[in-house]
Length: 279
Ligand SMILES: C[S@@+](CC[C@H](N)C(=O)[O-])C[C@H]1O[C@@H](n2cnc3c(N)ncnc32)[C@H](O)[C@@H]1O
Image (cartoon, rainbow, N blue to C red; front, side):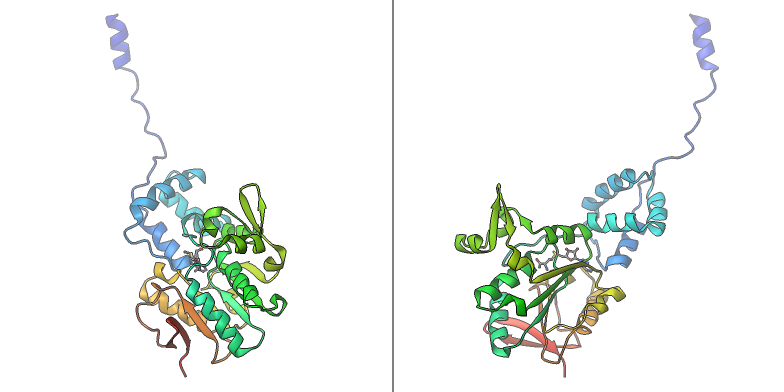
């Protein structure tokens, strides 16, 4: 027994593993993500870092450094990271006053409209616009709504057009009946509404955004809140480049703009704030 103890003690020391897990500091990943999307994560890192560690391990990385290397060379990993970390919360008839104002405005200008939702997330905003215009008596064949988002999964879900009751909580039963078909306990948007909207994955900071053409009405709601002020200014600059005419109007989410951007003139009508290009 004594000799066993002795021999144990003389066994060679266990070799240190060549690669050690290192998920201490995600700063580079956050900076890179901000560089890609404009989104800042101040004060939310305690929530997102555990998600990032799972993401890194799921992609075969044992450190944030390894994940960073992968992100730099693999577009599909970049896309997956964006899909993981963007917040896609939305619902039908969000900030409905703006949608009613749009109907009123469209009747006033009396021409076929091209409308942009940037970002449109999973489609609820763009479909809401189509619904209020249909309710307002507009021929949807004369309306084109383009809805873009950086999150490719959100765009796939938008194109699918199937929603839970939660997304429709602001809609009356008659509206649900007119514009959706029940599938089990889910709601599928009807084809004539779907046809009015084009969905495309797109980053507002990339050149592809400027290739979307020009628009009479531009919605950019609840995205700028995730940007810092210089990035808000860059985003507004991109959006203004897509205005069709000086009469094109812009709607933002109520918390998106702390100050009126230099390129825009604010207006307040019927309790609704909207913007046009500054003359
Ligand atoms: C909270 S949702 C807002 C959706 C909808 N406009 C609304 O108000 O309900 C914010 C969306 O912005 C998108 N987003 C963030 N950065 C973006 C970027 N650089 N380009 C395009 N979309 C972006 C996210 O993917 C997310 O779906």
